[in-house]
Image (cartoon, rainbow, N blue to C red; front, side):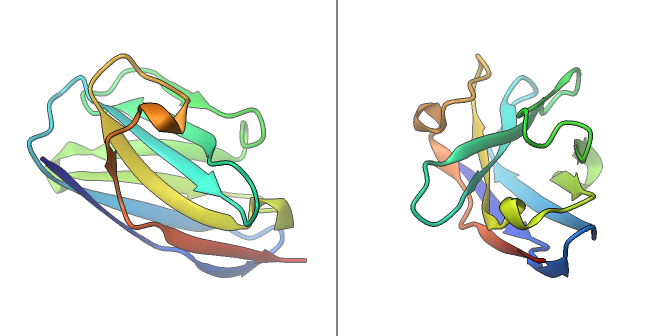
Length: 123
């Protein structure tokens, strides 16, 4: 079992920044995909960013490329999502997810989820 706990959400003005954290515990292996999704009211869960627990390449959804950065600190068992130049359309509940490979961008493929953290960007 893998447990994920997100934190760091909040209210921020457009153009501001937030850093989300996802603390990981349980049986997780180096090649697991660690992914951030988000879900706005009335919309499907959307892929935001991904990284493998062992490191390597990072992957981003088109709407956040150049503004968001995913990283991980294995010593702290934490995955981060640094969000810069935030826009009102980034408002959503942000979820951390994990799963064995291959790395998917479809939320339905993921078995392990955190509880989510709300991000609200005001205009």
